[in-house]
Image 1 (tube, rainbow, N blue to C red):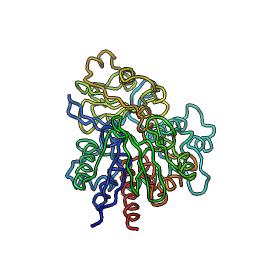
Image 2: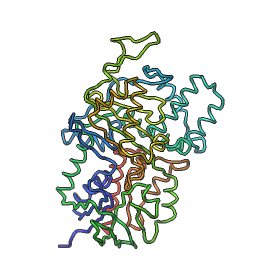
Image 3: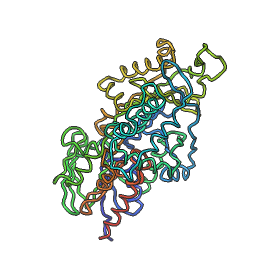
Image 4: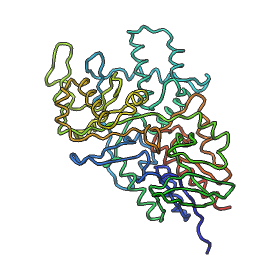
Length: 455
């Protein structure tokens, strides 16, 4: 009886795990090489000892009802909860319920990927609304739209392409992407399901293994990697590459892989059209939900008993470091999350965790008008992750630049039935930057590899 063919997967993130589960189920021998000492990649769940709540350092929300995620969680009887609560805005020193969503949606829905050439989001705004009054409602909506694009996509609005944004919006509409959910134990639930699946197929996972060189020719790949200062050499006919686009772009440094020969010119051109968003996120665990006792002013002083923040879900602000905060509503854990995307992440870059935590507490103090010393005294723990500084991601998740609509298809395309590609940046359905997009790309790549292994 012939021995099963070996497939090597570089990266044990979500796309790699999804592919490994399918390949193992098909009877192929699978070896996964992961640089980190854990699986999951940009899915990274910790546990807060004080509250017992999951602490997400990476992906947190399930956007809509994508079957790639829902089928797995429901098959595992994992409880799923929809995000609920009130959205508050901080502007001109005051807190009030948010009222800008309708205006922002109108701006976003005006984008066109059919009759007009592609352009950046900033260019679109400048062309469509050239001279609004600074104090006008439209100017406020423009600022909020820019904040939304840079916050939700962690993207530079001067680089992100309108055509890519439209494709993303259409993909979201198909799965009720305007709704958000969480599973009971965060994305750790999904990782547990994948671990069970690959365990039943005897998939071999080697963590702490950094791939350095991929030397390839049609149906013959030799990989050089290091693990605890030991050199490892592996060979296979098929290799699946699930590295973030940021690592595929660089030639040297931690996480860089030397392809011999180099990746073809069309791949490199596609990579040039895709960027990685920058994000630093902070999870702050307090001794109690102090914001339940905050009553925003209505212009005539405090209004006790009316419109307090006890049901606050999201807080949107003009803060330069942490423009977005959110709680764990409807769960009432005493935890809030600070989100520093794009320029906010750049302003915090280079600071250590304690310095970032200090600035996060200052932000909360300013926005909620709570004494900073009180916040310090209520603090249980703070968890920080800078995805730009993470050597094995060098960014949070991908977005398409102007002219990037075909880039994902080119990046996903196999080379000589030998090198295959997966990861959220290779998703071709408009779901880039999402966990379900990563899973779908892993399934697609696994199908391609299974087909290639038969001839």
